[in-house]
Image (cartoon, rainbow, N blue to C red; front, side, top):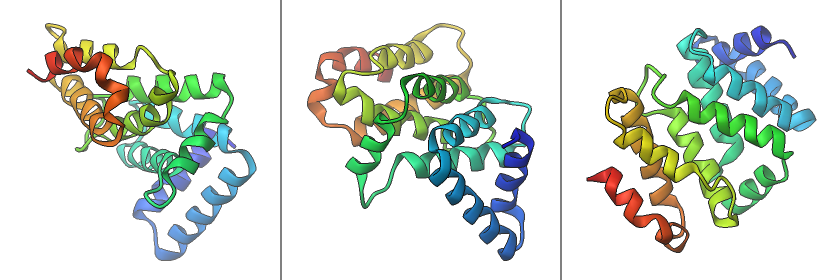
Length: 179
């Protein structure tokens, strides 16, 4: 699917009529069913492209979040994420991380996506450099405030939702960022 077509559909999920909203939801559900990895890749591209309409970026992040997390079935969603090919997961993670601090709305949707991905991957020993990268975003002198804030949000989502034992080895590093 062309990126602009997906952007138009995402915009309709937020600003269209009820019929447009329903058509967009059906389209996105069908796209996820047919090729979830490619849809997630495209959604992350839209989120990470700062020249895209803010509504499209926000809706792309919301669709990513919906694909990564369900309160009713957390573990199944995490397992589904982990079954996605490594190269696509790396692409999505990179885009979500790079989108931190680039959004115009609060709270950061990118931070939530980073948090949900981290909660799936960190317990399995994956995305090992994430906490260090987030802490560096917070503690590096001269880093823009919006990047610091979004990185702190991501750390907050991770700390809130992950088993404590997973983060114990990095607890001092995390505390450094918070202080």
